[in-house]
Length: 84
View 1 (cartoon, rainbow, N blue to C red):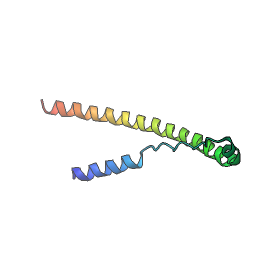
View 2: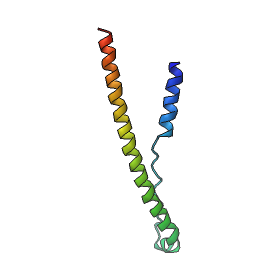
View 3: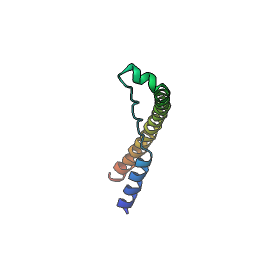
């Protein structure tokens, strides 16, 4: 039973994992930058939007983990009291 609960927690953590966006590529040659300006601009704008979402995800995960740690701390306190 404990293994099943642990498995569901792990699946939930994986589903809630924050994934950083891939850094956009910027060609070295100015000619390539000019040739692919629209594509490059789109890639950079997409990155900026995605990194903002990533930061929001990290903030939410930090808050979730903090609350979980508080709950675990309370549970541990109850355990210690019961074992006295």
